[in-house]
Image 1 (cartoon, helix red, strand yellow):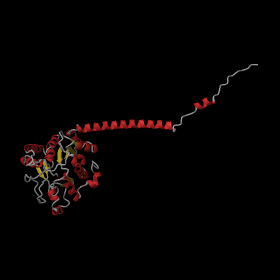
Image 2: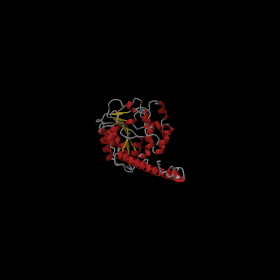
Image 3: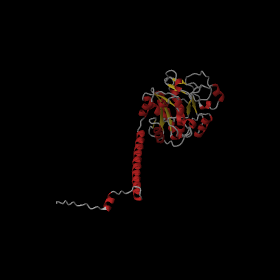
Image 4: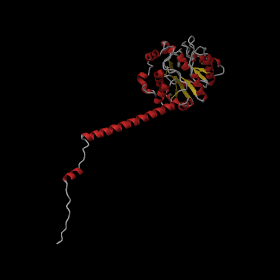
Length: 333
């Protein structure tokens, strides 16, 4: 009789139990391990994102720091025209207010902001890429300089050089101050094919059908420009530097440049009813009522002081940033 002998495996109940047992993840040890892992991963993620953000920001700042006037003009020009304004950081609220009015006339894409400090350059281009450029060296412009001050002269006297460079690139230029508000489309009033279109800054009332010829030389003017006038403007600025007793400004130099190029340049005086000076619009209510519906650009001049200008705009319902900042390419500042 054959007999088969088989070894019966020894069964260890304790061993079997241990081989199928798992450490619960939600006990104290497992939970602490999980939290530690998540904390490490979070720190690594934040470090990586911060490093990328800094690198990206640094790259962006470097890009705008090296952005040239030629590149900027090419980017914003439409139909061969660039609308230029010159701004330092304290005047950004006025830039925003002006841009709202320009946007309502659908000309904002032509705007080139000449930044007079790096803070303005970076902030405008962060909000509205490509529409601001800084032409070195940047003057000290941390304060809102008043008309007639040396700081005001240092900033505004640079405009002639900027405009001449843009003209030499082959573009037409419209120069605008940011303490203006556009109520209509000024391009509709650039009749004919003249070299220079300008506004008269004297508040004396003209007839509605007044002459469009060059008026008396002591009047401030601004508008589309020509290279000959720009070169003469620069000569006049260099010949009349600012000093405390005289407080010369670039506007006086521009007036003389126009007068000295008379006969060589075809000029056109814009209608007063459409382009009134602040000394007329804000001071003569009778005239404003008589010319109602004709106003195109309002200049908040003939008043000195940042806060006083804001108050006057508010009093006349022209401080648009209070309720319409969403209409500006810069948004809410």
